[in-house]
Image (cartoon, rainbow, N blue to C red; front, side, top):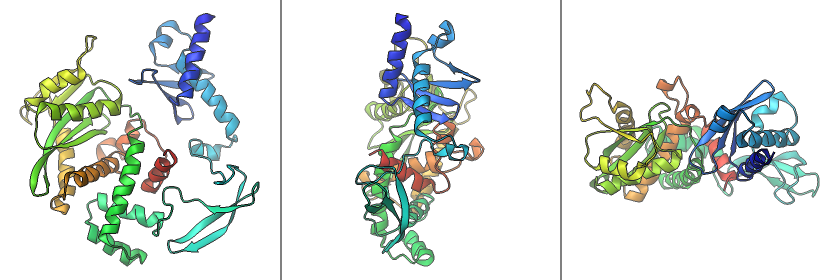
Length: 379
């Protein structure tokens, strides 16, 4: 009985620290208490099944199942039993910005420079307000801003984005304004997506490529998951030393929250020592380093991350160089968000790497708008 109560207590602690994530109506991901991994809990009939060792070997209700059961009960009490609204379960509830009441009704629209904005009225306090999460005090509409983001990261130059907005939306902005939108919303989204926990495989690919920044060539390091194609980390450096390799590998480890079983790289001499330093452990299995000196190597190849490098080069070619390193890192961060969450992947049957990594955010048609809204709600 003492052991059971201990599992319940730890399950409540997991829920209190928001380590339970709903994937769909029967599947949940529960982060480990150490934060270094996660477990999938699935509902089968009337019972829950967990992939942790406690459940597999002892066949008891583990702490992860206790956490999910409590989460499920709280969810059912908070949300009406309506199948058509089930996809909205994980969405933040709209409440009054003055008193916090959920008793709201639509009360016409407000017209301003950005267009028509839905107005709401609170039944409790009687005040009226508009909801424009993430786009407050913006002259341009959320649709115009997200169109600009989408066009830019699809390879269109800033001035061509400005021309497109003028022709099809009647919006007159400068290329400087569009770039300010990019910097603002890339940072908002990056803070959010870096807090997520992608379910990646144990094989990672790492490689480096050149970028022209302020007239000089610098190195962009990229780390990618083998099965999901999830772009885990990117980092810009002046050299290709061991400390530079360690930096990007550490970022990838912090993103995935696990150690890889193997890292596939080229023959760069900085990798062996960096991999040993970052992933060294006395426990088995240890991280294996697979060096691929040639693209035609029979054992393995690094074509996957090389293809990612080619996609980055395709985007960078339009810009013809970058102004400075902070600007370059901002653009790469935005492109990583676009690659992971927005852009469907042919090798993944039309899914995004985020979906393949079990990050089902239900972004809908306008993925940029949904991502900005979710990110702004988490700030």
